[in-house]
Length: 86
Image (cartoon, rainbow, N blue to C red; front, side, top):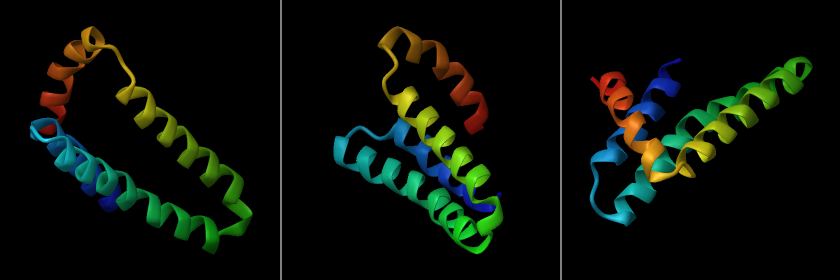
C-alpha cells in the first residue's frame, strides 16, 4: 500500500509541472514504483500470479486511459484530482 501511495503522489505532482520532460520523469517514476513490488509479488506467489497479473494490467489500462482523455473530460477530473491530492 505504501508503494501505491508513493506512486500516486508522484503522478499527482506531475500535474503541477510545466515542462514535458519533468512530467515524463514523474509519470515514469509514479508507474515504476508500484509496478516493481507487483512484479516481485507475482514472482514470489506463483499460485496467485494470474490474479496479480490481471490487477496489474487493469491498473496499467486505467493509467493509460486517463492520459488519453479529451481536454474537456480532463477538466472535469481536475477538481476530483485536486481533492484527492490534498
